[in-house]
Length: 320
Image (cartoon, rainbow, N blue to C red; front, side, top):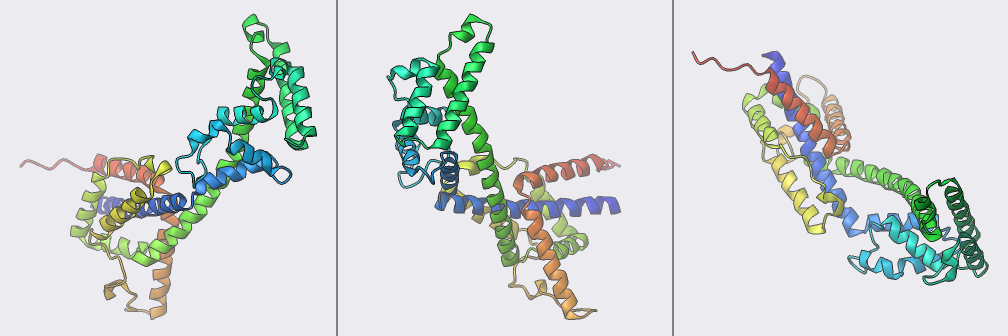
């Protein structure tokens, strides 16, 4: 019986963390959508890639390229995703324009890169990088044994290497965005946790002593069979706001000791000094915020495992 109660309390607490983390994730998506965070982060990464401090015109030229126009969902916001092929073709078109005879050979492309650098179309950092990529393409041709491999055009080989260069750089950009997102989600978790008074210690105590509440929370947890979807990646402002309201309402409707309106959810100081109760309250809130910042996918996976363990441990009821 004791083991069953512990598992049920664990299911309830994990479900609370999942619900709160969904609120934080939706709020993060709302903010990212409003400020076009992804597009700006991507633009910063491409600016660094192109050494924009020495040549902002190159960045502007690529972003205004015809191939980029279909990437703009809203003209007031920068694209949040750029295919590697699109970037490579747009950059190479600035250096070796379409229809140029220089595209037909690696030597011709080297000359075009040097000419573009001399005319300040690209800076020395970008020209040196392109020359290295052209040399790498030449080495690949020399090492190719089959006629099919040797028949590939010089331009296509260089294009592939520019795409790889772009992808490697975007991995770092993704890392920047992830760190920013993690910091924002933790800040949002603190805000929502304190605003809703989601105290892990108080919730655990209440679930441990209230069988009816525990059953209600477990029922809600077992209905959460679907993992969080990926719509958040391109979430619209309205959808993100609706997700915040939906998950916050679901969390508050379970009868858990949440919010500040009920004085019973405040520190009472019964049996020990009031400041100890407040210290416990702050610790419980901080634990909740830290847990919620781990993200909805983590807590969905954890909830699935705990529910599975609990279901496996249940004994069939006797028919007699």
